[in-house]
Amino acid sequence: MNPPVYSARLAAEMLKVPAKALAAAMDKQSYSAEEVWELRDKLAQHPPSVGNRKQLFLNFKGGTGKTSLSTSYAYRLAEMGYQVLVVDLDSQGHATKCLGYEGEEFERTLLDVLVRKVPVSQVIQKTPLPNLDFIPSNLSMSTMDLSLMPMAGREFKLKNALREVEGRYDLVVFDAPPSFGLLNLNALMASDDLLVPVLADFLSFHGLKLLFETVQSLEDDLGHVLDHVFIVVNSFNATFKLAKEALEALKEHYPDYLLPKVVRQCTKFAQASSEGVPVFVADRDCKGAQDVQALIDLVLSRLVSAREGAQKMRAG
Ligand SMILES: Nc1ncnc2c1ncn2[C@@H]1O[C@H](COP(=O)(O)OP(=O)(O)O)[C@@H](O)[C@H]1O
Ligand SMILES: [Mg+2]
Image 1 (cartoon, rainbow, N blue to C red):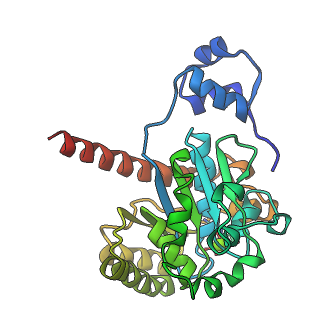
Image 2: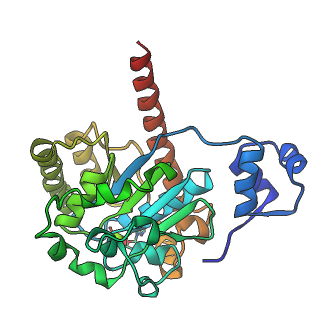
């Protein structure tokens, strides 16, 4: 992925300042990601705090958009000024690819952290955005579940390993593989929030039942309660009658979790994944980018209001 260059208009928009204020702080035709990041401090334009949150994109079904959405979501949150870490949990290394890298380039993955006790800080990689880092994945990760199996405290390895760095990031975003195993159990245990991309079809609908049962047993057996669960309908095409019916069924069965906006079907996602870039890099203004932005805005508003609510409670 090439380092992004922002026009003055875009940089001002990202920093939420008038063009004049931007020019007064640093007068240029275009701005690098580093310069925008510097200007955030200079102009004191930081986004509202969400604490240090860990968020998992999970669905046991493949092809629902976990990777497309999680990498675009993380990339955009970084552009909005959050410190973000993407953790690629899938041995196919698709999130790594969507950020512009080949998993096989990297000697170390999360396997070294969880199984061989390498500190997590040693596997974190930088991206062209100064405040977006990632942990790569490759085929070596496919032995993870077997390696974890005989270990004591095997469900808590990821949660514990991340303690070293969690204060550094506003958001840690996990891209999960479509499987039902120990690594995903670790990811659930390490997460505060769950984001579930689903397609508006009835197979996805039935798959959700298993996911919710798993979340429930996490609570009952391991004592871990997620703060938020968000279901996001992805790749929605309103011209299909079945898609509309499936959306209605989701609304009826999961009213508390289903986000009120969908991510529409958008060919730019395919283009983005083939080019190894997040959708915002492929086309900043496409439907997909607009919808991921709307997803972010919805999630952030819930997080910020939950945080304010908790603070008020504490203050009495
Ligand atoms: N909103 C969308 N519109 C069109 N295609 C999409 C959309 N979201 C994802 N895709 C495509 O669907 C395929 C599966 O998406 P992916 O993110 O890899 O799913 P998962 O990680 O859940 O397996 C990819 O080819 C991707 O480009
Ligand atoms: Mg994937």
